[in-house]
Image 1 (cartoon, rainbow over the protein chains, first blue to last red):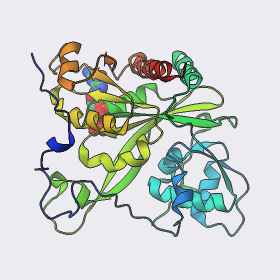
Image 2 (spheres, rainbow over the protein chains, first blue to last red; image 1 turned 90 degrees about the vertical axis):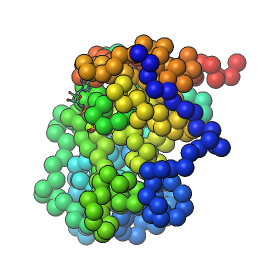
Image 3 (spheres, chains in turn red, purple; image 1 turned 120 degrees about the vertical axis):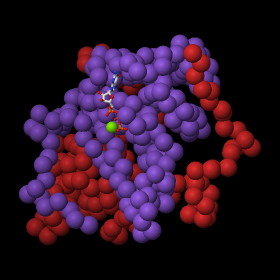
Length: 137
Length: 206
Ligand SMILES: Nc1nc2c(ncn2[C@@H]2O[C@H](COP(=O)(O)OP(=O)(O)OP(=O)(O)O)[C@@H](O)[C@H]2O)c(=O)[nH]1
Ligand SMILES: [Mg+2]
């Protein structure tokens, strides 16, 4: 039995997108990122540094003036918790979580522990540690 | 925005807390078409009950099949399952399952960024779904392995046939798995890590 075959996409061979309803999007087939973001967290620099697997830890008791949604975050991360987990427990999309956390970081109410990201030169000892950890599963 | 009241928020169970020594996390993405076993794989290796994080997209990016004839803008929620494996007291691995179809690629922006690599879960009943995904991973330079779920009613191709169908070089591992079994899913992750390790070996400066 022979399976269907993948065509590599070369820039000039990209077929027109037949599935795209005409007139919906002017600027090509790139799906738009259309989150509904509330709040003012407008400094993209700070927000960009928050990843789904950034670990968040509370630094302080929330002051009495802390808005309830921020208090809820602080209450959850007395022990380290990933942004993804916070998002799941609070039922908030990642984009909204980022805004909240940007505010909490600025207020120094939480601390962020950055993830280890894939770099141009992968870290062998990191991979060995992961393999060792998986072996124990 | 309706935030959950803090009283109604259910946080992690005591046994699901990470130790305070947890310093950093890494992530791996499991990508594949509908019903291919993403959630099953995440769940079979995760130390916590799999959780779900959701993102909302408006209709423009959703495609026609979710449009029930209304001309008002409808928001569709896309769920991503994820699980967790503690590697050491300092290091945590997160696994994210995400749908592979092109209309969900808006989810990819933050997801693949920094991910160590990806597992492409392959459904031999709908191989085509994976074609675009593989192309996209190649474009993004995300290293990946291919895991083929053995569904009883699915066509069974040889690894060689699949490699040629997917137009993959000999280096890219293709393995069979049963996502329902922890050991099998673990082996898939292990294959990915070994593959990444081999890349690290070959690209290391002399
Ligand atoms: N035989 C077999 N069945 C599997 C395997 N993995 C998953 N299944 C079954 O396939 C069905 C779908 O699995 P899911 O894990 O929900 O698939 P999914 O990719 O998360 O599906 P969506 O999130 O709906 O796209 C379930 O009934 C699983 O029990 C496998 O490796 N072998
Ligand atoms: Mg699923």
